[in-house]
Length: 115
Length: 113
Image 1 (cartoon, one colour):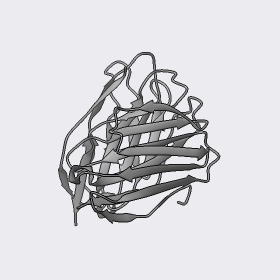
Image 2: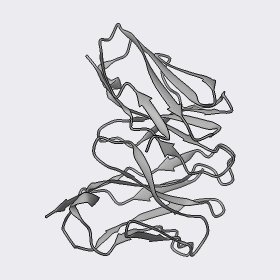
Image 3: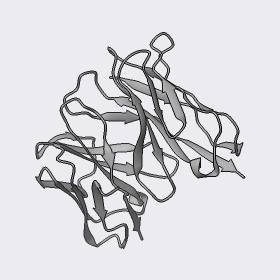
Image 4: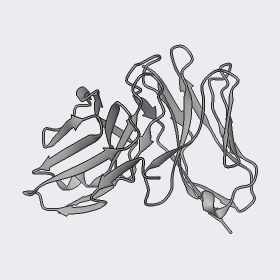
């Protein structure tokens, strides 16, 4: 089956700093790739996704590009805010083309942004 | 966001109690999931239901018993739990037809005394 490896945190940044959270994957075929975010006290919510190679997903100032050459989907943001403090999860389908939509998640990276 | 709701949000129970967690999705999805999120451990998939049929049981102990009466509702029945079962239990749903985005509820924070 597919697998995902995500940079472990915690990551602490000052407001307006540049953020990169690394995510690499192994997969059969070219599955969709996801970043989910979990704010304190809440469930996970989809942050962005990319469905094919070279696609760029973007939302709320965050971006990630589907790189099949390096099998990576790194999350970036040019200027983080205190409100971005959360745990970020990289994810992809358990099996390519699986009809059930099962996802596997990375271990999560906790981001803390200081004012 | 009220697409997936979970009740209760917090639950404290003794090891001999029986309780149930409830999840409801208002998104018209066909697949529903239970996850366990413990401190310092990766998100663990517990059960998957697709069109009300259980399609995955990820070696979960029998003290956790899922029930899916229809595509909109999912329950997790709990009995004789252990303190190490204390965790955040998350429910999610998806279209279940290969469009893989999952939508999560806020979770139930369970504490087993």
